[in-house]
Image (cartoon, rainbow, N blue to C red; front, side, top):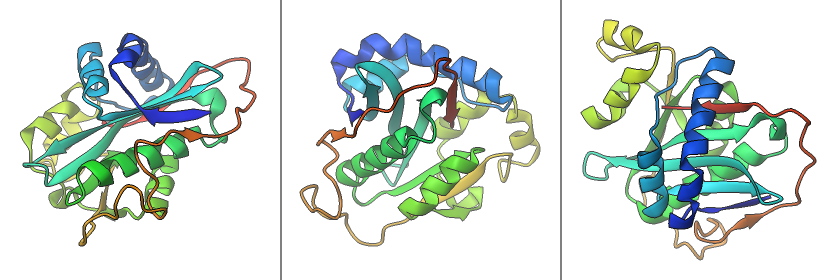
Length: 209
């Protein structure tokens, strides 16, 4: 398995990833914000995304966004081939996205909202804490991403104070260690792990928005 920062060369996978988002939402039966290929491609080209491969096959993806003048950064759009679940792909991607966030935006609070218990567990291991939505960004640019989620009306009915997602926040009071610090793997150093044998049928799982 190879996990690395995405580049402009990876934009060829943007449309495929957006198809995975749609299929995953249907499979899980939960709401998810819609992504467009041009936006995913923009994140790749800007070095604000992490991509994973297993034996040269696309295995997963996640990107980062900043809000409130880079006060907040979110790791969003995590999507993983479900045939590779339980093999550490999602965890490796989350770790890489977290590292990238800490290196590029060391003063920012890192947050996310999710309905996935697996992602909540990984976030907890990274140091995130469950919080109310009032502790997250107030940026309209972030919350408008929820409009394509089927649970958006719940969010609106609660004046954006709560929804089916759980808010989680990593608040670092001190600057992040340098990228070269062994305590924080360099976000720009690919993570390589032995490839696992995938199941015969692949479905996809994600969290968001």
